[in-house]
Image (cartoon, rainbow, N blue to C red):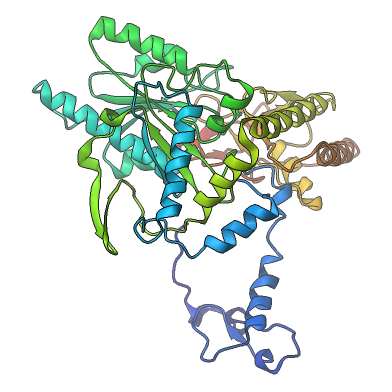
Length: 488
């Protein structure tokens, strides 16, 4: 988020400083909010000031909007605390941390069915968004090589993806001068399909992005189907178009609870896969990963050899210095859980999601879009217009700390407003039953208030929704129904 400079001259005195009510002499006066304090204070005093302000944040364990891990074991937290000071970029100074990163890349390559005869390569990143951008850059460079080899212009690259992609892909296209070809959704098709993807491809298409777990409804896009459609397109047009899999969430779900689903390096056109270690990889923010099928999929031009603090090292990243603690925590999880442990955790999450979605469907006013059978994530809507909206329900659920995002779908389905639930490790059947009790309470409240005036904004957001996915509701139309349109 970008922040502007606050003009102290426009603020009231009470807004310029904090005046905490502690008896210590050090803070009997005010403390500036937006300028450096003139004097030091005791460590405990500074802690109390920051700690007390953060009490106003929501309870992350009750945040069913976020995909990000909100609970880790004490041993993992201890390892992270012990390694906060290790700079991940300094492989020469911290060689064992670099070794753990290399082991994680190898584990992920094998988890994603890298063939034995191929030499997969990969790295950690600050999150799956950076990893996605690295994957996009490799696609662009490889496409440019192909175009130059064919003596063709290489100045109009495009990337085909569903309009439901996470905002990192919009950023990639804008920052790196690639035309985004966003395939719309419609009817009951909430994500990209092979049939629709090829309609948007041409010889300037650097690749197709397939999402293993849409943030709008938790559904997987059919990677194998997209691969087969691109095979047919190549036979017809001669265009050899690769696939990048955005597995931010699903790349840590499908291998464990849907092992027969072909979405990874078993699919020939999949050249690279990114994932988020801090989502269903079960690590606190922020760590991401990307693995390329082989060295040929990652152009040498993108790799820098850096002489840093006494050692030469190859690097491909958009950031530089970052803590090694998240990589250490990821390796801890891989050792601690293994395949069986991850399978147990992810299956439990899906079991809770299926239970919760099934019970919500029984409440009466709601209809499921998805159940949680792909990711342990589902979305639901109101069956018909009534005296409240999903935005009203989202707002009222906050009275006990629950955060359920309410939002509308992208272009062609702007009238579809939903609530979404993300079930993560630590969200138990007991918590699910507490949420159901609160949903019943609020449904009963709305039923007792026939004159309640519904609202059509607010209620949170879809994780990572970009500007082309945000909506501005209109006033009611003449027939009393609300309609919405896309923001220009």
